[in-house]
Amino acid sequence: MSATQPDDWFEIRTFDDGVIGIGEPGHDEDVKSYLVIGRDQALLIDSGMGVGNIKRVVAVLTDKPVLLVNSHSHWDHIGDSWRFDRVWVHEAEAEDLRAGVGNERMQRALAPERLTRPLPANIDPQTFAIPGVEPERTLRGGERIDLGDRTFVVVPTPGHSPGGITLVDEANGVALVADAVYAGALYAHIPGHSDPVVYRETLRRLAELAPSLKTIYPSHNDYPLPASFLKTVHDGYEAIWSGRAPDTVEDGVERFVFDGFSVLIPVGWRG
Image (cartoon, rainbow, N blue to C red; front, top):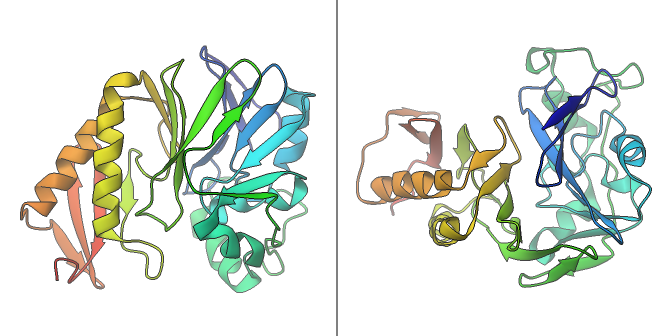
């Protein structure tokens, strides 16, 4: 693994399996996008927060044509999608991608207390917004993305959001799991987006995939993680399902705390 720092906003890490992490550690979301460069084209998974120019970073890393696949349409994953010509997203999240994100929401997202380093000089939180994008293609799951010398399969992993997807490189034992699983607070409580029941099925599906994988790349916090973490999270979620009491209840949200992660679920979800 090698690491470089192309500017003051992004952190780049290149791993031995050919996955390149493009992190944004200056914000408390600590979001990650990923680039995989194939023989014929490059695959970019998510475009980050949009406050740094991720297209310019990608252009430094590869001269191959770039296909951008959005894992889902939350603001911290689609910020620079408008800069790319080819954008794919699950059909359940296409309208959110088309709508973009307005300044009122972005003012809250870029509040000073959420930043650990200065924003780029051209970004003013009082006016910043994320433009909408018309996707070139919408996905349902099962599609194969061929880069020429490696292939990723689109696996639906909703629950955090309606159209969340994971991209799996079966030959190399790699899964880009987006927001389905990561070391931190897993959100199953977002009104209008999250579904705790659907999330359970997603975690079961990912746990079943774990034995065939070596490494997972989540979209937040520490990365990469061992594939065994998928089963760890699944087992924790099943404990919740079996009746484990929440560790805290605040503002209508139950928080269940485990070693290395937690789960947030709205009060009353069992009903």
